[in-house]
Image 1 (cartoon, one colour):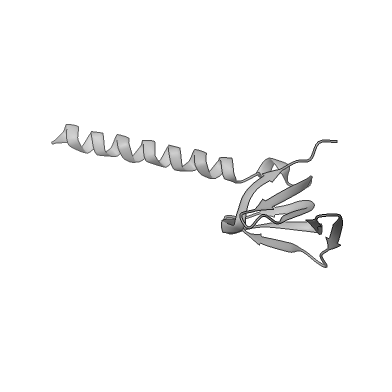
Image 2 (cartoon, one colour; image 1 turned 90 degrees about the vertical axis):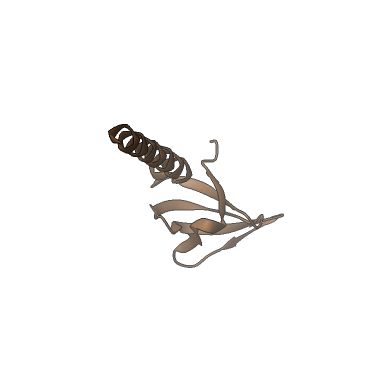
Length: 93
């Protein structure tokens, strides 16, 4: 009985660690204050300064939509829902 309880507790702790690692991988907190490109699941991309990384969204300042042959400026802060983010990259250079 005690062994079963300890096994369940160990599995729960392990699941929590795995979930936390996955969450950290998808949240680019180390890039706050840097210029990043947010690539969305729909194929659109935005470039701007990452000012906040929340569980439900990422926020960019001085953001522009990156379109073929053009950049379209976005007024104010751009908030991209976390579920729409495919990946975040820090451009080279």
